[in-house]
Amino acid sequence: MSSDRIIKLELSRLNLHLPERRLSLKEALLSPRPQVAARDGSVHVFKRGELEFLAGLLPEADRDKLPLPILIALEPKLGRGTARISGEVEVKVVSQVLGKEAAAGELLIYRPEVAILRRKLPTTTQYLFMW
Amino acid sequence: MAMALAVAPTRMELLKLRQRVGLAQKGYDLLKEKMDALVIEFFEVLKRIQEARPKALEQLSVAHRALSMCFAIVGTLETKQASKETKRELQVDVSTRHIMGIAVPAVEVGEVERNALIRGYGLHMTSSVLDEASKKFERALKLLIELAEFEESAFAIAREFEKTKRRVNALEYILIPRLKEAIKFIMMRLDEMERENFSRLKRIKAMLEERE
Image 1 (cartoon, helix red, strand yellow):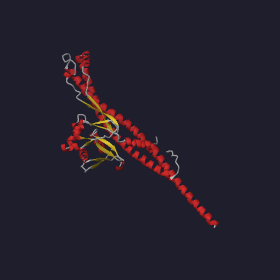
Image 2 (cartoon, chains in turn brown, orange):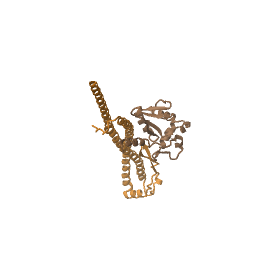
Image 3 (cartoon, rainbow over the protein chains, first blue to last red):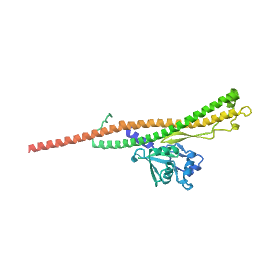
Image 4 (cartoon, helix red, strand yellow):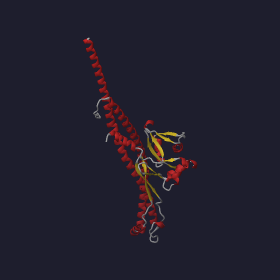
């Protein structure tokens, strides 16, 4: 296999862990076994403790607007170690978790903040690689 | 130094090589991002292991002290007999969570500590010292399950990190330098050909002028 094909294969495999369909926080809270099916056919399970923590951060009306997992988009264009959080409710939640000022629709976070976010929400956040 | 690729010095080849460098660079940037994210995950798990391991070991030593006490007070044979009568089932929910495609175990344990009445051994032949030792072992078990989850995660992340690093190194030190070397070679060759052409044309022009 040529090196180009290997690189293309490698790039196509980077996002296989992402879910086919995201679950809202409300759906996840109501489910007896909160989980999503990934594109590679595996199953990703959310920890109930984290769902309850997220529920505590949001008013009840917003719970069905928060898709899970929250995606931490890593984009080399933004610079090494910079990640983007998109979506109004996602930004609201992440801002609260990190103690940052809420931005409208999009939030850029940096490596130490990504580490904090992943520490607090290990199952309800996932990396997304963009190019 | 990276070995240069054998390429034909043509403009077409130059364009192709530039595209290949672009793709390799993109792959390199993304894999580097993945490696950084893996490092974050690895250190996070490591921190949790560092917190969980002393707790589990401390609880185990407390439990072993309680067991020694139990052997001394209740008797070795009686304690062993009670352990054989104990129910061994434990409700553990083992699933997976994904960190960039790495499946790491996610273990959710129900209540590990049990009531003396539901442990299964007879109460009339045993003492509260045995209950206390059992309770301490159950606590230790819960901590050990957590520790196992973290340690398995750390191994899985480390394995993936190793693989990714190998790919990043191959791109950084072998493929990209080779492609760049080939581009440099083609550009030099094309420049050289242009210079040759130019001097040839000058020479022809001079010859034609001489004839006239």
